[in-house]
Image 1 (spheres, rainbow, N blue to C red):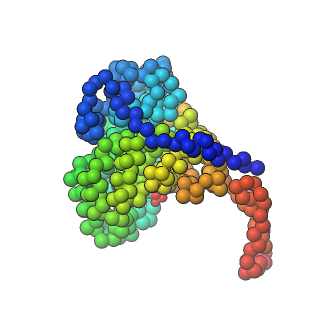
Image 2: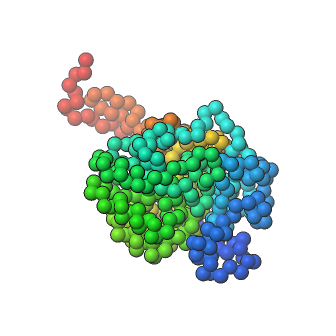
Image 3: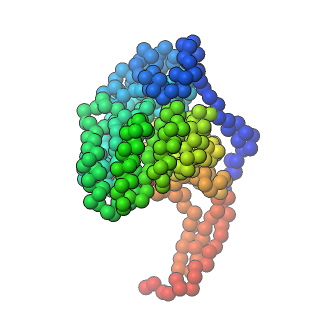
Length: 393
Ligand SMILES: *Cc1c(COP(=O)(O)O)cnc(C)c1O
């Protein structure tokens, strides 16, 4: 029987703290600079020397920083860098953005393009896998680089494969493909564009009559909340219905600056969902996931997907088994707000698209009745309607 792990004392500790100025305390950074996204981007932490100024590194990390730079760049905004523990190599924030030597190990199961995107591009940068919607990769740059990036083969500009970006071709394809009613902008991170550049792109998409729904996938609200300015929100709200899928994995990423930025987006009428990746040693427990979804709801963000980690080259050390994800969903369903429960999915390796995974609640089934269990493990019988009793030979 599932035990109830809803611990009220722990809930009271869900606070939204600022970590600023943190490691920059001695550098006399003015609040104007700190709160400016251009200052944050200019001062991203990238080199071994800059990292070691603040963090005590393990051998695995130091070797990783020196050796992994041709696969995916290292870069962390000062805002996010402040969330990293100075000495603990197990710190969940550290493990997401500081490389380790394990990134150079290639497992036989690993793939360069685990979601099979390159083979589903009718024009460069536009992934058309599902009938009515497309993924439009509009840039190869992010504010910071996640070590488990599903697009590390083309993102950050250091690997041999470059993301080809052909906006005119992509827009032409969308114009002549009326079954596409939903365009998801991703990359890289589309919110790195200036307001002006993003507005021009959204305007061109909105001019296509059959495109009903726009969304942006972005980790900027987490890595660079300073980018979520009132001007950006005012621009975005002209393009409704516009949804934003944010990406956060651990409750400590939700600082007061992040909460305030998300609040500005929500006030602009933007519906937000969160996409998390299940990562070993980072968020692979019911307790962490429960705190994460509770904090997301407090930020007016609905947990959307929990992804099983893709089979990306050099990321085996960050992957859990699928049973862990099922255990997490089982630990949430019934135990907390239904709005807080993401759909657990695995991207079918090689290009199968998102496949939902759910704990088994059906214990037995025949044409007359289905035997179910609830979140507490109690059994229930549902009698099927008479129509379904037609004998099946
Ligand atoms: C995830 C994804 C989408 C969007 O899928 P939803 O389930 O609608 O969020 C669209 N295209 C591609 C290629 C994707 O990977």
